[in-house]
Length: 160
Length: 273
Image 1 (cartoon, rainbow over the protein chains, first blue to last red):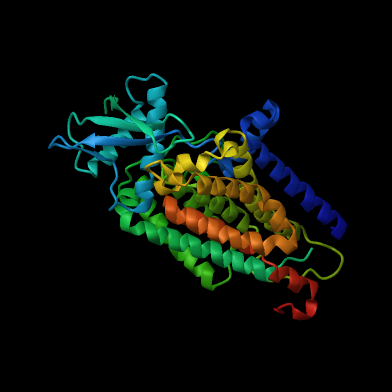
Image 2 (cartoon, each protein chain N blue to C red; image 1 turned 180 degrees about the horizontal axis):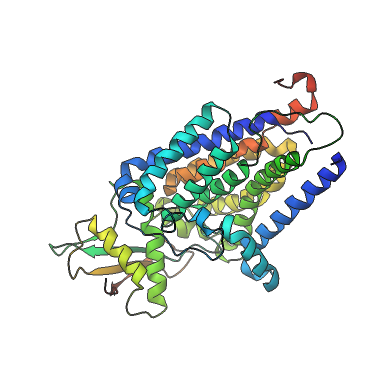
């Protein structure tokens, strides 16, 4: 293959790959439906990526799932002693639980319920009939984020 | 069709060192991450390629995860000290991608970046090669394409992160950092007590992410933005407990280092095999 043809081939290949990745990762509203469909087909299996940490807006509520211990006290699913990767799991898990609650589900999805039970086992809180709750602190005015309003929602888990 | 070999070798070493260090740092939590994972794998995506990136639960038992961790650590350490081999990198990619998808709740954009870079590193040369004459072998096309995809993947990550923020309202209004800082999961809350500083950090972060691709592409500003990137990723990593994510971005920076380009422009300095 001549050097010129090789260069053209590289440019075309790289441009096609990057274009499809862009269509896959840009905000959904920026990408036409048909292009988004093909970008999903291309990128999802091997090149999965999402670049939306704190975007388009940070979450207005901080969230925490807690489990009731046998002595009646409540504690988060992870503690400062846990490994940082394990500790980090509590954040998106709380977000998924909150999304499920916001959708109006009165009983959490089986997958989420199983994760909550499994993580509670490590806290010493998992036992038959364990109670879980979602604690939220939400901002009312973005200009005064220190002022947050707290609410607590009792969670009902699917049967194991 | 020359490649900046020294930059490639540095990239390979840095990414493999990150892999080793990241997995080593998870070992104290191996019981709940790898031995008896608290979180089960997600349903696999459709398509025939899913077994490559979602091995656990498909063709590898979840209980094999800790063995996969050890295998990737050994292979990564080997590629730090010895030339990378494409088939070893392929094994690393399959196992690491599957580990990332197994711990999907604890994974970050940094893990996704490394998984993507690792895939294209399979196609990078394992040693410095010259292409004599006018004819270019097809494998050389693959080498060059893979290298440029890795370079541009890094820029895409920054650009899209910035553009995603433009689609909302709080980043443009300057409120976003204050909201994040007062989130009990992140912090530091004191930042919101100084609204002017929170606004400076807000717009600074947005500007840094949006300008990174152009500033790194343009050689005179490249090292300045990379230096800012080091500060940005270490600061956000320490504050938000995502040091591994920050380091994942930094270990891909060598793909844009200038040493290789300078060497390829002056053949007398090039390292001869």
